Image 1 (cartoon, rainbow, N blue to C red):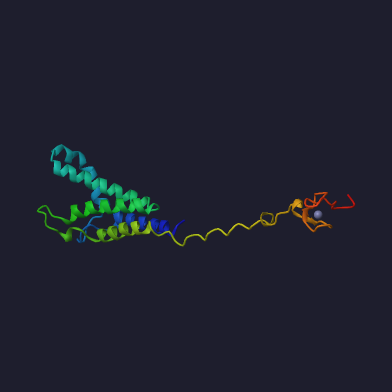
Image 2 (cartoon, helix red, strand yellow):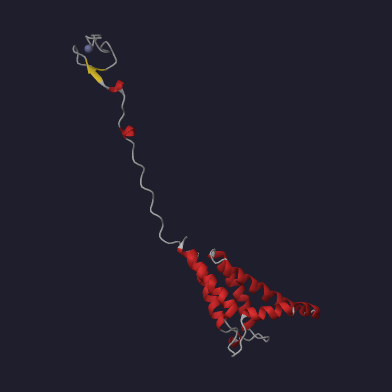
Amino acid sequence: MRPGRGLGVGLGLVILFSLFAAPVGYGPNSPALYDIMLVVAFNLPQTQSTGNPTAIGQAYAFLASFGILFMVGVLGVFPLVTGILGITATSVLTLMFGVAGNGQVDLAGLGPVFYMLWPASVALVAASFWRGKAPPPPPPAPIHPAATTIINPAMTVVRCPSCGTQNPSHEVFCGNCGQKLKTDV
Ligand SMILES: [Zn+2]
């Protein structure tokens, strides 16, 4: 396994812990995102019955972001995709909890959970580029002796006793002067 994948699994666990245990806001009884998710899900039918598009949109955006972050936490082994999803969902939640209704930034509404989700999501993307040391290139294939040494009887030569021309050893008569090359053949 690439080290980036291993780190991705660890970061996924950080995100899961953040969702279920890290508080939103700084109050003594600040809920975790999981606690808020239960309330939002439980109240979803009532929210829809109000017909308020803003409230309905916020409820679905919150549930979708929570669901995406849960998937990101489980699937940290694929750090690039999950990291991008994590950043996206964390951005939505940051806007929901960090910007008051009048558009003012309200950092008190954020809390520790966001200081875990943001670094973990960004680190997931970074982990996807951590591939570790490249494997060494394969050693060059040994060159077979036959590839360099041409073993071919026809290439051996015999010198003509008369004129000195080198003839292939399978020839019986000299190609130059016609002298018989091997007296014993
Ligand atoms: Zn000859």
